[in-house]
Length: 174
Image (cartoon, rainbow, N blue to C red; front, top):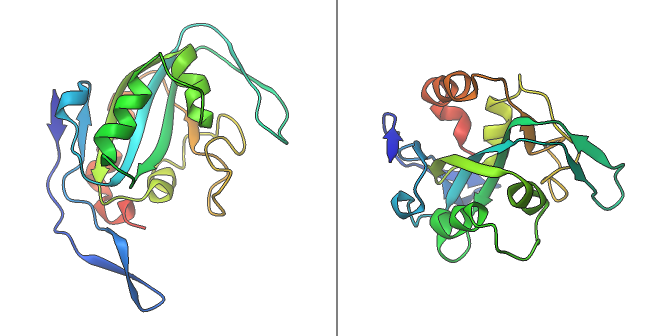
């Protein structure tokens, strides 16, 4: 199942006078089935639920105990297979723990993902800036813009988040 919002016309972004590989997102959509995910590169926001406390340890960071609840993880997928390959991996439980978010998706349940072909993960974090960071540095070890790419969501998360993406298409670009 996918829910779409209105399309935004693709337009190349310029970085230091050169064209960036990232473009303004086309159509933002929410997916609960990996078969409906686009193969394009872009950004995504995972909706992850945990039902019992999860201890998270990251290098050079204090350990954090995440409380049960719903969390948002903003990521990007510009490698082979694009968004479909990356988000499908996050839905799987049987995987090698490679990224910070793997610790959470193995312990919790990935409920779905908002996807933004051509989007930028840091712009998505910015759109969601009213939600507190769940853990400093989580998913953002190579990011100079964001304190964290993992955010704590409210109980009515889907209703609170989706309207932001409909209202802020310009913010989804890098």
